[in-house]
Length: 318
Image 1 (tube, rainbow, N blue to C red):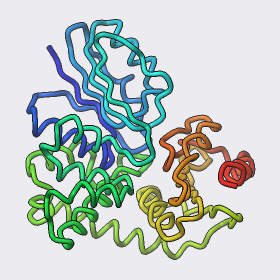
Image 2: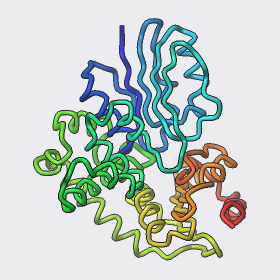
Image 3: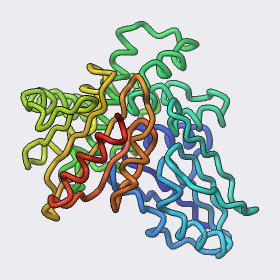
Image 4: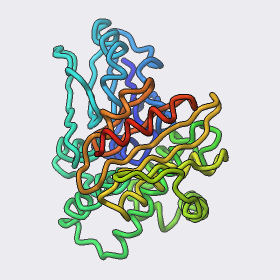
């Protein structure tokens, strides 16, 4: 039997898998990618009797491949919090799907494991900008506030590292980063001893400072839209910059656009923090769009549809 671990390469996906594999070590084939690379089940060549664990990628996007695997006799365990549509009912599918705005995949795994590796769920929640939830999860750990702040830095670094459109733009490939973290076992040990953290953290801080110099391209009554320059650093920083500006102006929605190799834009959308819904529905109006209620994205927005997108943002968050 071959086991596959299929996971989003961001903080939530990596930290979700870390919890599972620390609790139940296994020799598995890793299948992952950058943040918006979510049609990952298409890459899994599992056969009857194999087992696949899926973490933090949309079931709606992966439904055809999921049904193919189930029909072939593959057992699948699925953890996710993105828009899923109807979850298939099949004896070989163990689905843990919750799309509530205040939930991330790492929290679902924490629930499943009864909090056995809670510290990684805290990092996962910070990575998905669920700051209050992260602090609540961390209460039983009794960590000093300075250590919690460092865990948030790690979460932002993992998210930052995953947001590049091209895997070559990542500071550390997500699969390699996962293996390094698994070897460390404890996020605080990784932060204190592994040079990879310092490298990612320094790059994140540098790129975030550059992003802060960008003024909004458009300011609407209920939203702001930013267009960052066409540089590798902007694609890495797109997500955490979106989180930062959303946290700073919780009554507004935000969209951060970066030029992509197809001649259009890759888009990250944040619903207002005060009303964290609607981002996924907005993005699903465009091909390659999806995500969750509070935060979503579009893989490719053609430039000729930019004004249509602006109108959709105004309508979604009016």
